[in-house]
Length: 407
Ligand code: HEM
Image (tube, rainbow, N blue to C red; front, side, top):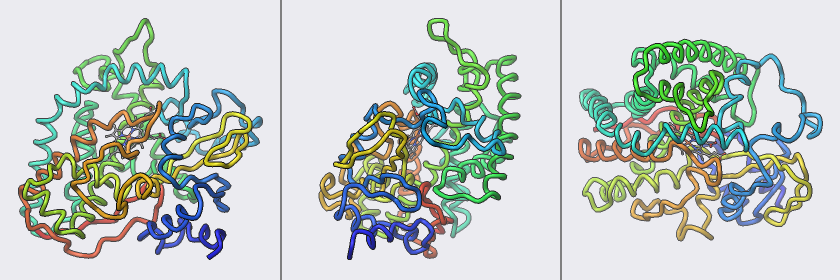
């Protein structure tokens, strides 16, 4: 098969590719470390070492507007129809580069500390136990809607200090907004995302005002109060930060639980290693993250002239796409990479990224996933698939429509 034919298999609109992208990704990865995606024009990286180096490469960035105008990079001005969406992400860590990124990340890190995460553990265990009790009563249940979604949103909302009664609202906004990050979207999706962002901004501003009046020591309240050598966060910065914590935190955690539990159900011997305690939940979680990545693709802009990556010459303003799912199955990095092995005990994968944008929420996500997996294994040792799960028709954020399980 020619390289062009192989590249044609990278088709995010093809249900067969979405259902199992790994054979196509493997074929392309073995043929080339980099290819130009004809649909997007992006230089697309397939191998672990190149993705890992690119994450740390300061010649590239998640944004370019700190250095160039849109016109200078030959890009269109942002479409003003989606201004609420743009406003919501303007100060998100994921849309910033130094010096703004450094400044805001330092303030966020002062509040989102390992100690704050560890202090949440009893609450996390409480949410997990309560929801698993509910699932036990159902016989058959959907791990995503009956457990993972309410669980992850309860965790992040309790950390942020959002009233529990509002969590459903936030969940709906978050679902609508993150669809904007797929490789292709429709106007209908954009309108829904923009409307959700507008409502979300209004809600968050009211929440910040309330926390300023009645501080509660939780994250939004602390973000409103944090100070570093005279530096503080503005209201717009707190709005974007709160939203990125909820969005980034929620979807990826839910999809890791869905994709990873599916993998365990498809590999009963691996599930039994967790149930028996031979493999601690903590290590199994790392393999769940690696084997079926919940976030398949991250992008960067080339910010300098004549940059060479994976042997390919790239120009200022080019876009680079890093295929995490492909990198995480690269046999150059992981022995027997396609094998799902909960005892692999390799936490140095790139599931949480690398470099300056490394996931702020990684310790929280790991704790949430560990508590969930341990809870499932203890309560439901005979857990099995109740029906064949299907993937949502998205590639960048990869997750199931449902995961029906029988206890
Ligand atoms: C299994 C769950 C999760 C996965 C797989 C994940 C993955 C990632 C990855 C790969 C990045 C880097 C993106 C890039 O370099 O372009 C990232 C960044 C980030 N994540 Fe996570 N994440 C998870 C959970 C969370 C949670 C629970 C939170 C917060 C509550 C969170 C907050 C963030 C934030 C704020 C950033 C941006 C950091 C920056 O730009 O400096 N994530 N995450």
